[in-house]
Amino acid sequence: MATIKVNLSINSSDVLPFVVAIDETKEISTASDTNANASSMGQLVCSSTDAKTINTEIDGGVDNRALVYIKNTGSVATGGVAADPNIIVDDEATPIMEIAPGEFCFLPYNGGANSTLTVETASGTGYCEFLVIELT
Image 1: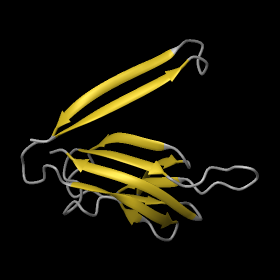
Image 2 (image 1 turned 45 degrees about the vertical axis):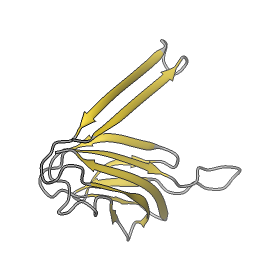
Image 3 (image 1 turned 90 degrees about the vertical axis):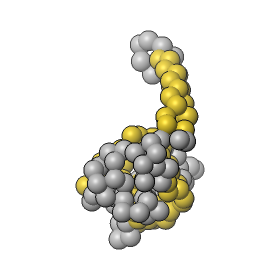
């Protein structure tokens, strides 16, 4: 059985009228079934006409529960230069979130048997890195 350790830290003293201090750690074990430890990791270039599947290395798609990390590695706007576009994350062709340049997400995902996550943009070329780890 393999494990993955996840850490989340969110701290701010000025975004709300009170101090935000969240520090969570979770160690997650994978099951020992035929899909255990299936994973996909890499970097992608996508566009509005070229959506990319991020879990292609997992045979048949994500079957049950997985951990998913996606980061928009595109350029943030600086000095009058426009930012690269937001990355749109789709679950079975239905948009579920948009990630701006420099932002990332980490989420548990369970789309059902043979489910597919894709990334695309509304326009322009987007850049992202990703990690998908199927747990069960």
